[in-house]
Length: 21
Image (cartoon, rainbow, N blue to C red; front, side):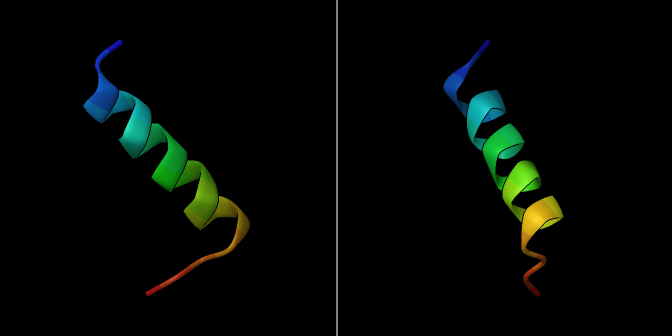
């Protein structure tokens, strides 16, 4: 898995937990 994919996954998980605009 590339770093970019990992970052996008982390951001998605964060947004699911604490939605931001």
